[in-house]
Image: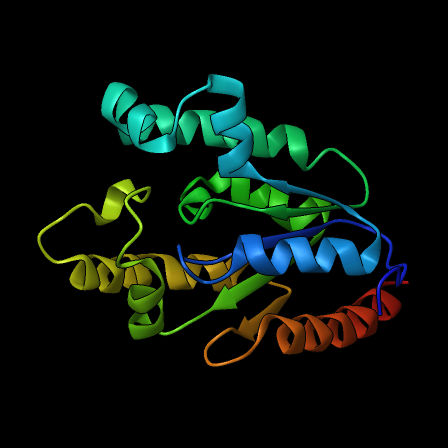
Length: 180
C-alpha cells in the first residue's frame, strides 16, 4: 500500500512507548508524507540528547523547546509528526494539533508501555525507583488530554506495525473523505 495519497497532516500523540515514531515512519512511507519526530528534531537542533536537556534546563526548559519545534513543524504541509509524550500538556500545542491536521492517539496499556520502555535510558521521566508507577501516573494525567486532541484513537497493544498501519490507513481514508 505504499504511496497512498492522503492529503493533510497527521500528528501522533501518546505516551512514551506507544509506537509514535515506529508507526509514524510507516505511515509517512505509506502516504508519501515527510516524517518528523519532535524529540529527534530537538536533539538535532541542540546537538544533545533529551536527558541532557532535562538535566541542564529542567522539564520546563525542554517543554518550551518542544512547543516551539511543534509549532514550526505543524505549519508544514503533508507531514506525519510524532510528538513527544508530554507535548499535550501545553494548551497552545493542543490547539495547534487540533487545528493544523488530523491527530491520532496511539493508546497502549501501562503494562505494554512499561515492557517497551523498561530498558530505555533515553526516557528522563522514567529514571525513577518505580518506572511502572510513573507510567501509570503519566497515563492518568495525559490520557484525557490525548483524547481531547484526538480525531482518532488507535490501540497499539498486541498488534504488528504492519497491521496497525493498514488499520490506520483505512481509518484515515474514511476521515479525510468525510472532511472534504
